Image 1 (tube, rainbow, N blue to C red):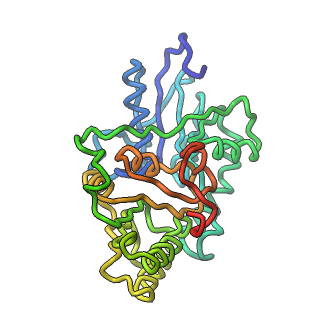
Image 2: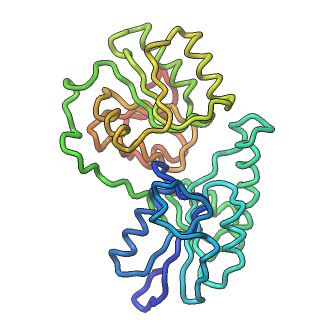
Image 3: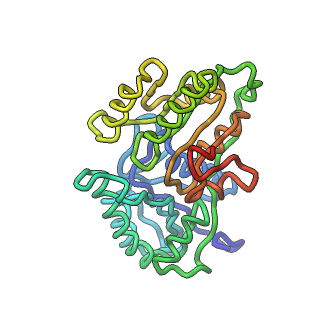
Amino acid sequence: MLFGSNFRGKIFQVIEALDYGDAVSNQAVALDGIFKEMKFESVIYSQWYHPSVEALRSNLDELDPSDEDIVLLHYACYTGYTFPYVQKLRCTKVCIYHNITPHTFFQPGTEVYELCLKGREQLREVVRDCHYFWGDSSFNLQEIIEMGASADTCSLVPIVVRRPTTQGTGAALTDREPGAWVFLGRIAANKGHGTLLEFFHETRVENPLLAQSLYIVGNYNESDPCYQALKAQIDRLNLFGCVTITGKVSDAEVANYLARASVYVSMSEHEGFGVPLIEAAFYDLPVVALRNTAVSETMGPDALLGDSAAEL
């Protein structure tokens, strides 16, 4: 085990930006709590942070581990600060790989295209310089192994998704908003929002009662081509008034959408884990999704998965 009975060092997590509401940041915070419950000394270090989580982290330039300590590097895209900083450290280094969205999903020349491409190139250095690797899914670990990591240095450590403490999350479907669909995820090409809209529209044409409203819950950039295309598609399909794009919302608002919807629908084409799939299930919300990447692994053998909208 990495944390054996003789381990007397400290555990430091490193993340480029600690935010609220995203899976990678939530995992860092959850692990920090688990380590402290296990009586380890644990600190999260980041270069950037959202003000709401400032108290949970320290500045990256304050990280100075001894050779007895362990540094966990969260890696999900190109990092201009954290990995170069970790490269110089003399201690045990563990890469927690959350997967990088293939750059081919995005328009060449855009910032996200360049970041994902550079991240994939930088990942080779990460594999070379880290000693151990944790993956949210076997799908993620397979990518690391294909990059040259030895399988015996890889461990499956799924995302921690805590059950909601709010009472009444398992409302009966008859008490929910009829025909209400919901999807959680930032607006990005790999998340399949365009396919989701088409699926919603086709279902609405066939049986309006089954597709009365669609809530797209997640962050977006108004200048992003993907967001602009989505807005144009809503107009083209005459779905104005039926589709709500919320932008980034609080955890309480996310819970509200999951508690009121009738079905969670994901047409995402690339997931390294898929946290909202589990969150929706905690609300007794039926989940249907495309069977791809890590989705089938996260959802399990009895999930409502399909290879196309028609099958779903």
